[in-house]
Image (cartoon, rainbow over all chains, first blue to last red; front, side, top):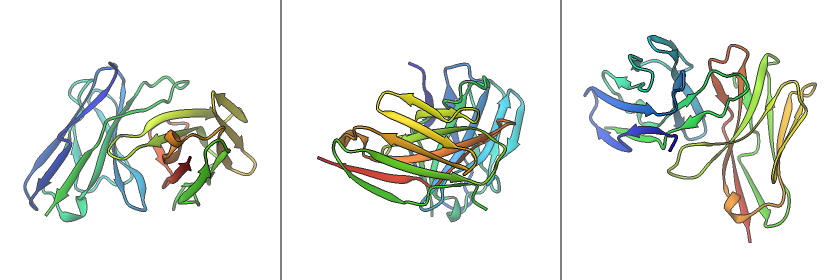
Length: 114
Length: 112
């Protein structure tokens, strides 16, 4: 089954404790991206990657890091989480084919930073 | 500044009737528009899209209309079903294809 898999689904952590949210896709998509969803703000892009070793900032990159060492994986790293990073996070992937923009999203990771 | 706007946070419709969800955008360089549907505790699911060179796209009960001069698009669902109750996000992508820019979403409730 074609899918984007995120782990964990739920995470509660303390301020300053480094964490990684994993994202993996099995569709051989070139493009991967991270979004956060907050009440009243919709979905905002954090980082994206057009291919292996190619990453760039989205609209709200502060406090986050990413890496793309393999095509299928795109982990989101919070080096020193803060309470304002409490949010619902989604990973998405898509082919670069411009006639097919049906981004596939993971099921989400709900992160709480206390 | 918000580039994709969904000005109605919620919409209530009776089963069998038409649901019309609206979306406005400000960036004339947007190349492609998409609608996503989201249920609680799940990721957004792609619903339907339209290229900027078209003014209409249909897929079953779902039709998207694009009015480029007004920078406006709408999603029509006919007939509406209770299972359509979800949050609907309008999204746009620019010619560089580097970002999917979302509106804030409209919660659709279809009552039986």
